[in-house]
Image (tube, rainbow, N blue to C red; front, side, top):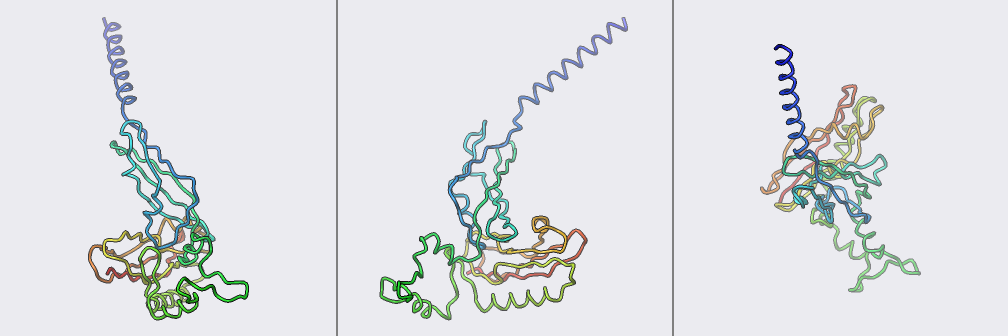
Amino acid sequence: MRKGLVAILFLVCGVLLAGNVVAYVGEDHSGPEISIPEEAVTYVAGTDTSLLLTGVTATDERDGDVTDTVTIESVIPNTDGTEASVIYVAKDSKNNVTKETRKVSYTTDAAAAVQAAAGGETGQSDAAGEPAADTEGQSTDAAAAEGQGADATSAEGQSVDSQGADDGQAQNEAAIAALPADSPRLYLTQYSVEIERGAEFNRLSYVQDITDDQDSREELYRGIQISGEVDTNTPGEYILEYYVSDSDGNNSNTAQLRVTVR
């Protein structure tokens, strides 16, 4: 009798286990597949990261096209600042997440990037060594002279307050000079920026470099702390403060970015 009961219990447990296995196998545990174009891309620090989404798609086995879920988690420049790793994220309706990394060229010089994209024609000199004239007969030097006193404007419509940027950089350099030798050093691509109302704003893209006597740049980058918020829908001036601590607990300088939404 007891042997019969034991056999029945084993049979019931086996049936339940098999049912759970079937149920688990039937569930969706696979994230979408992210497809990234192969063409070369140059990202200018501080500009709109949505340009990096051009041509990027995501497809899920069950949900189909989920390209609208693709976002950029971060843009991490490498040590020498010539390349960056762009981390894309996509998810399906079951919240299965997939990440893919793309290597892109990286620069902090917007003018150089525009010139490279134009085939290097801007600012070329003729055989006599004189600046090339534009279509109105003005030399590029003259055009630059006419623009003096105005804020520099990037290709994305963001402008830099030259005086504010200089003051912010000077303050940051002074703060770095006062640090102990074993503290991390944090640098921004710029220290003052103006953006249009409603424009996309990526706070991490303004970090140019972080150095430390022990920790790698990648390790430090993952620990960046940013205090302050920017409401891109409300015109005004905002202050963001960037800092990081290394694995020994040493704090970096606090770099400030002044953001003006106009």
